[in-house]
Amino acid sequence: EQKARSDDVYHANLNWWKQRDALNAETLERIAQAKANFLDITNEMIESRVKETIEENAHMGQELLLVTSKLEKLMGENSALRKQNATQRAQLEMERAQSESHARRAIASKKMAQSAVNDHASATPLVL
Image 1 (tube, helix red, strand yellow):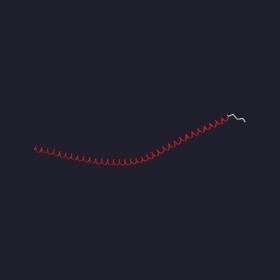
Image 2: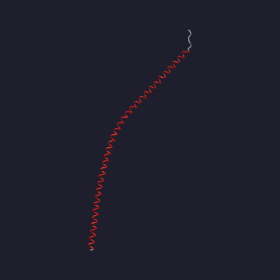
Image 3: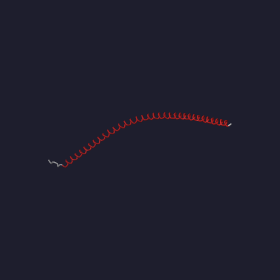
């Protein structure tokens, strides 16, 4: 009877270990499946984000080309305006110098005329 009881305990323990082993195997399978599902979802999210990033980069590249083109055009216009400004400043300076020169000549001519009038008035008249 002790042997039968010992066999029953042995078989009960054996069944318990087999059930535990089966449960562990099932748990490991579920974990592996969950991991695979998680990796699939993660890969899909990464692929989606990479695609979005590539599209954003392409869009930014196009915008950058447009801005670069506009900037080059504005820089050309700026250069032309600077040259025009320099030319006009030189022309204005030349006109100022000419105006000052004409004013000095006019003042000198006026002084000479006034001096001539004064000399003529102060000259003693000749009596004939």
